[in-house]
Each structure stands twice: as C-alpha cells, then as structure tokens.
Image (tube, rainbow, N blue to C red; front, side, top):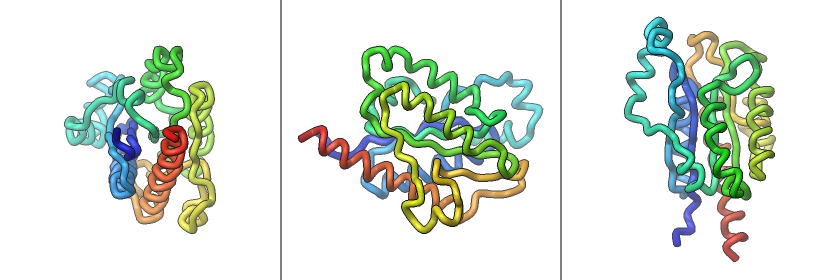
Length: 205
C-alpha cells in the first residue's frame, strides 16, 4: 500500500481567484510528496447569470477540463483542502452543496480521522475571510476530522496575517494573486501534507 499522502484540493471559483490558489496548493502538495487530485465543485448558477459576467464566463470556459469532485474523492483522500469565495461571510452555495452530499460517508464514519484545511477569497478587505473559514470548519468538527490550520507556523504567515487559512482580497477582480498569497498557499499545503503524513504513519503503526 502506498505511504504517500492522498490530498484532495476541492474548490469553487466563479472568476478564477480561488482556482488559482487551489492550483498553487495542488502543485505545492505534489512537491511535498503527496498524490494530489485537483477538483472543482459543480456549478449551481444558471447559464444566464454566468454569461452576464465576462470574467465568470471566461473562467467557466477555461476550467471546463477540471474534474468535478464527488464524495468518492473525499473517501479516497487522507487530507482535504477546501476553497471558496466568501458569500455574506459564509461558504459559497456551490461548496456547501458539495459538503451536503457527504452525509452517506459521514453516517458510516468515513469522514473521520482525516486532515482538513481551507482557503478563501473575498472582494473586499475584512469581507468575511475569517468567518467563512470558521463556518467551513464547523462541518469538519461534525465529520470528526482534524483541522490543520496554518497558524503562525512560518514567517510567511506574519506577512499574510491569517492563521485560519490562505486568503486573498481580489478587489472586485482588480488585485491579482501575488507572492504573499502564493507563499501562504504553499506553506499551508506543506503543513497539511506534513501532519497528514505523520497521522497516516501513526495510524498505520
């Protein structure tokens, strides 16, 4: 049996900012030795809404080849990193709907004893980053999962300032993902893989 950590990076993104962070995390996870699946959640918005926003439509087309996450991907994983834009200080409906499909796994204890973490994007500063991650982590507590937040465990976290998870302010689409966010994303991925590896080795023993 493979000893490599199986990491699922599952995100929702409308205009591409969360997707870009997810890709950075997935690449860092692979470099850290994990077997990684980069997955998006299903889109729930109507085609008319997507078409009405040029950036949203462009990202939908650009990300068409990314596989859609299923509960089987969560069952497969030793660790899961969820990502979402904030919606009124909470997770997006697209990610929440995916979480709600995990009831069968939850009922038989298949979500427990895995490592989980999260990242978030907002349009404005103080736009609900921390509350969104805390809301996401409520579900993890119900799973019996282990939240591995980045905390202030590396110098990069004193730059980005969010111990709950990687976060980015996109300024209504005008602020591209920069080194500060990428550094935080890479550290979060490495920390998740490190802790999940230790947990997997310990449980295996």
